[in-house]
Image (tube, rainbow, N blue to C red):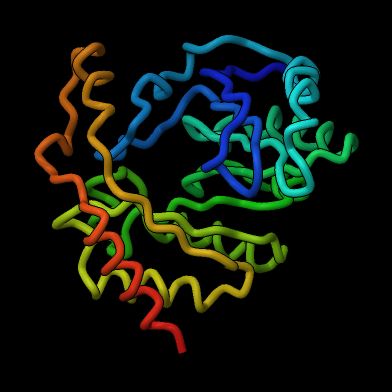
Length: 234
């Protein structure tokens, strides 16, 4: 099975538990206003690898994984190449390597989830209208995916990039917490500050960065939002 891959990161520490080998897949149908990797959008770019070739790369670093680490497949959107990801995860599982899927919750996932040990699910907004306007898909599609994770009891981390003036209200944070509380598979919620360092990529590609006007949240602002999230717990 051959997949199109944008790049690899050998020793990632923010893409799942422990130290991870991260595979960034090529191709994504979404156009998120805060996307840091517009160079992963096109489906016919990237480089082709077989699943076995990627596993051989991963195994070179498994001494660094410890008991918590493993491989994370991110993107782009990995569920746009489900057969490849499924084979890659299957080969990893055969070798005792922990697998993590980093996804926006769109695409075909039926053959991938049986081999996913954990999922990082990006919940971009808690308002369906914002999903349509700033992402380009229906929020219901993402929630349906989350329901499937619940059915399969796959440990899940919800992630949200905090975008000042768009999803940083107390109402939005409480809605995110309610989504988490409704799914027992969710064992962690991560709030990530919006960054504008990707501006250079947009400039190089000659396309506008939709959220260039947004401020970067301060550490104090992020702390306050974390407190709102925690205070909403029963």
